[in-house]
Image: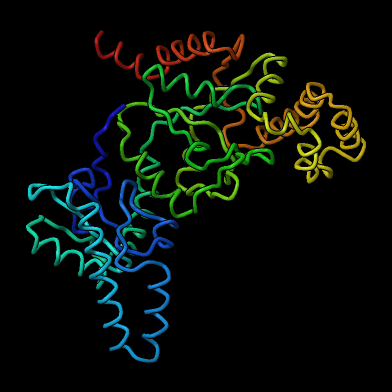
Length: 366
């Protein structure tokens, strides 16, 4: 996979070099601002912390001069601590990038100290706010240039595992569910992990897109417009809907085992699983939901999983497929004989040879 960012979108319009040119990227904002979104790889070295930021802001409304004095006091103390704990690791030859919310006082204070210390230092013009505008615009610019290969198929057929096998086979892969920290269904929340904010997801997504070789295919799993609480960019979603489809299927027993493995926390608590599926009652009917509840109460997890697949997921997928763009176009059939590692690796190698980078390399060599 290419490690050089695509030239289609470049941070030069932010007044800076390629992000990878910097030995250190400093986010000078408060920890709360940083948690919502930041440049991937940036280190949070706040000029003021969350409590100090709120205090200075409140004071500013009544006495701006006093607020500046208080803020300067906090800034100098905090920056001195950061210099001792972080900046001491870097040399004068290292280039540093700094940004704050609007590219004003907080990053300005950092930059002045760094430059006076001898560091080559750049500032993002307009700060994070301008960076965020650049991210949104770039996510509209890049997706139409992707040569997407769309892995489609009903829940539990092994699309995500096949995607991982394709990555191991040397293919370019965009794992949206991995970026979104969600499996994309009512059961998709990952135990003990929260989804990123929409803004941070956008930043992580753009970082991934910029690293793709646009001359080579990118494999991606079919998703709804939303993955949990995360909304896919319009341009990417439209590119996915017009991508070449690869219809993945797998034996039902393998799919049942996969569901129990991937959702082990719910397999251990089948009643909780059915509770999460309760919003499906208008689709599957009260009798079907009652059956799921009985199977859960009796601990018949395998039968419950099979019933959820056959009564909900498969019919739901067929309905959505018939109404999707290109539904009449023939999809490449990918019939997995098993969801075990070896057959998945074999299938990925075959797809790479016939439709991926390996095939392109072979054509170029010929």
